[in-house]
Length: 355
Image (cartoon, rainbow, N blue to C red; front, side, top):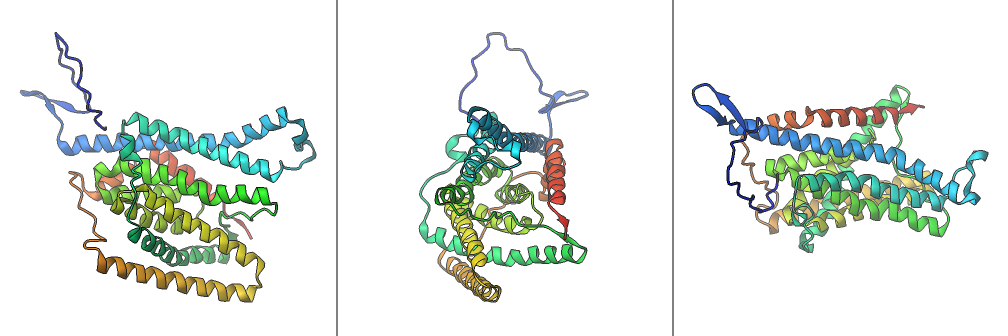
């Protein structure tokens, strides 16, 4: 846990209290502190279960809040009672519901998690201004890495197609109405850039850094990818998450993640709309040009940062007593995290449909 630098009130008659998580009884010696590695495992398991509970809360709210909000709207605004005729709410209401339900569903559980571990706000959400000479090359590196990762998604899609299955991506079509389009862009580009960075590269990443930067980067990225609940998107989200997490740690600023995430989502939405309005032959040409551009800019940025920044791509070794495999095993086999992994696995399977 994080020390809030508050000294306990002295007790005139202190009585020894033994926490079984910190002490063990040894015959002939009495209560002695647990080995450091065991205490570290207990701390990591507690942290993992707390994160898992936050995810369970998020999933529960995300599955109930949109329907609850829609029901309240139809109750208090009779003109929107379209459910009896089988129609949906207007798009602009749908986008508003999506915005507020996402903010509440993700924000509340993880704010409670951050408060429960007493992590200082400045540590969980470091918002100092980063060096733009790192941020913009980082954006190009992430775009280039996403292109490489998309090959894995294509392989998965091909395998599914060969057995008669199909898994769609999670990019929705842009609505035609101008007001609704603005709300759609906010929900698809701006909101994830802030909210997801606050949660995954802010609270989760920085609460795990005491177990090693490399471990924190990997875990936060896996959770970020799993949270998309889509087997096709998972490889891309994992690679992009690893890139963003690394550069957030490297620059010491969450603004790095916000800017890079915004650029990635913005380009994804733009290209998705562009591909929907151009002929198929032109789409293949444009897609090839975009892929080449991403790879060239990403490789060029990688070379630039490597040559201009000493130890740019160096992760400080962790000072933990547990090995990396032991930490991974402890985290993912903690009860709440295991439940979350099963839930997201089921969601990924259910996203697959017959051709």
